[in-house]
Length: 394
Ligand code: ATP
Ligand code: MG
Image (cartoon, rainbow, N blue to C red; front, side, top):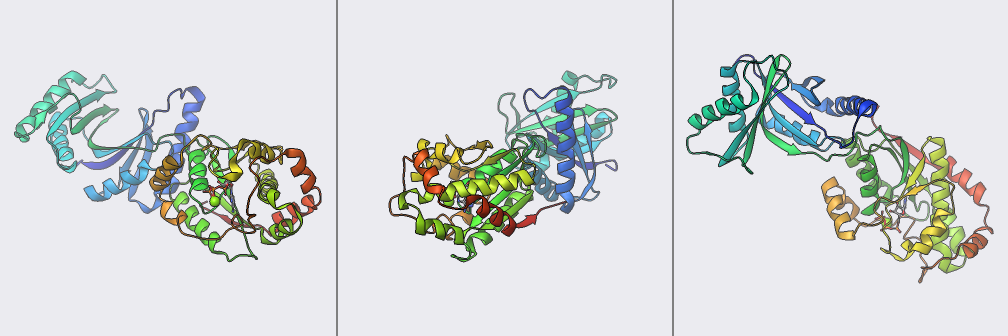
């Protein structure tokens, strides 16, 4: 089989993707994959018939191809990924490739052939291909059974343009939209479980996400900064984070803790974080802020307190996890790969100067009154100036 090449086919099927949107989506997904796959043995990448075709370098083995497919499956915008072979449009060659693809796919008892002909200039139609390839495989795997409904493996045979693509190994992708088609967002990123998941959700809706982390420095160690940096590394693997700003908030929290009513501290810290994040967002041309808040999860996340936080900035605050249960958020953070980092303990600005009983039903007028005793605008400028930024990729 001289003309055999291992390939990866990237499928996407965002419902409602039409016209100009569709081509912007495809171009962006391809560009993102090109940027992310530099460590993998890719020979060429291009779009064919509603998929992205990745031709792997010659001599690549099944394991390497599967590893690459597993990686591709985690990239936002990828609905499904398959790996198999690109061969000539000759039935004999296609039969052999189908046999190889089936052998690669691992243990199975039942299978089915799914043929597709994107070009009618190929003389055998899809029905005939199903039968012919099916008959060949039955002969070569006499103890395996054909099953039309829910087979263990599906052998796909597709004739597209001047070649045929044959694969039996497919994985479900993370889906969503490719990063870069939905604008820019500033995400408040702690080292906790929730906010990395919130950022990931928005990246999976196509947003370019810029993290903003508030550390308790110089009042605490920089442990939370290291954890956030590890979290950002995980998000960066699949192109989900563009930058991280780290803002040392400790001194300012100390001021608030000394002079504001204890009950209101948490709301005041939170409003200061929003104001600094909004200033960074304006600088970054980002259109909204994102937090990992979930309604009622902790004292500060009541409806009243959300109203008090929202009123601190004239920019939308998106809360993708607002209606998500903690258990589900934990599962998502395990899927993302940040759970083990987030469960390590690190004091950040939120654990610093916590009052014994934080306000759960903040009243905006009281909050604004308490805040007016501090030079907030000046603080925001100082904090933005003190922010350190780490940029990913490029
Ligand atoms: P998380 O698990 O994301 O830390 P949490 O359950 O600890 O959230 P809160 O402490 O009320 O809840 O924080 C709510 C949201 O505020 C976080 O999801 C995050 O978006 C933002 N936030 C909290 N602390 C910080 C911080 N130190 N730096 C940046 N953002 C923060
Ligand atoms: Mg937290």
